[in-house]
Amino acid sequence: MKNLLTAKQAGTILLVIFSLVIVFHIVALIGFVPTNMVWGGRLETREELVVFELLSLVIVMLAILVVCIRLGYVQWPRLMPVAKVAMWVIFVLFVLNTIGNALAVTDLERYGAGVVTLLLSFLSWRVAVEK
Image 1 (spheres, rainbow, N blue to C red):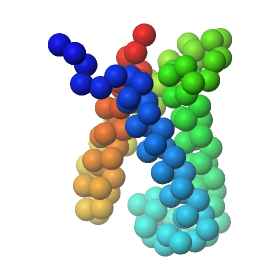
Image 2: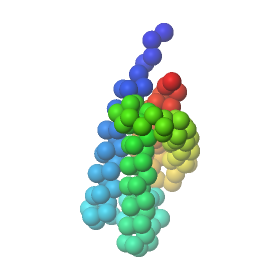
Image 3: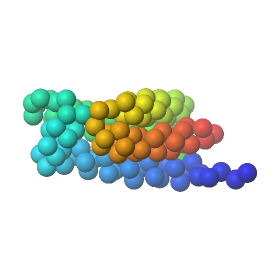
């Protein structure tokens, strides 16, 4: 049976979604997204928002680098084993995030973010299992 999605296709979709996530975090940092609409509404101050959004940006950029290494867009052969492990870590984090979203209080997190993180889990798994 032929694969539903190649690792390269899955990785490309991940890169597009991660790029959109970067735009969202920048928009949130600028202030176009209310504080109660991010991080489950748990942030209380603008300073907390800035810290969490900057941390998120760094993590997403690292995830982009990992996917680029795994797909061969960035040729760093020495980092390929690290990128393979990192891809599995990303997969596990998305699975845990999906579980957390399924247990969320708000419908937006449960159905919106939950579906997105489930998709990201599948795409991450597909890139991680590639030889």
